[in-house]
Image 1 (cartoon, rainbow, N blue to C red):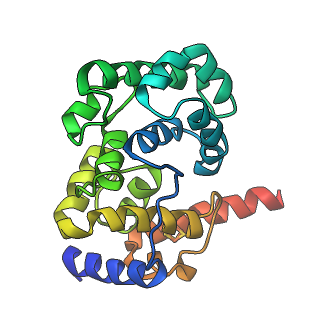
Image 2: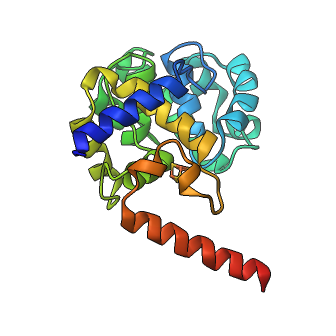
Length: 226
Ligand code: SF4
């Protein structure tokens, strides 16, 4: 099976498993999505959705957020990890949006990446989910799955993004990005698992990968017995 054929079969399975792809982070406009995505680094979407209602009730646009100030933002978002850095970034980007973008979130990848605390992945999520521009943000789930399914070599997230963009049709990137995240959350356990039971790895993983997983599973079982 060629890589293209494999990608087509994977896409068909993802479409079947996840026909709907709601955006997991609660938001009401591009600005609230940008802030929510920034807050989601190294924490769960559920945790972010618990703190953002209070944050946006206190300040719903960049000018109000800049006026709210870093200390108050930190207090409101303290339950998400890395709250001090995230609060500083939220205040900084809000100020920059007011000063350089008339208080609006630019629909421009490079301009987004220039905002404090906004990296390529965050900017790509905003382009995709707020503006509908095709992008393929690669998070840890997607990076790992692309390697396990033999769609990329797993050396870096940059290579994974490049490979996925080459293999899948541009108009499907936004949906696939979310479908892969949903797949990883639903099917990839934190601990050992049987590749044979997985709707995709069971046929898409390479023999080498299957052997590695089997060895890891055996080692884990041995440790548990010992
Ligand atoms: S076999 Fe495991 S790693 Fe591979 S996709 Fe399925 S659940 Fe995830």
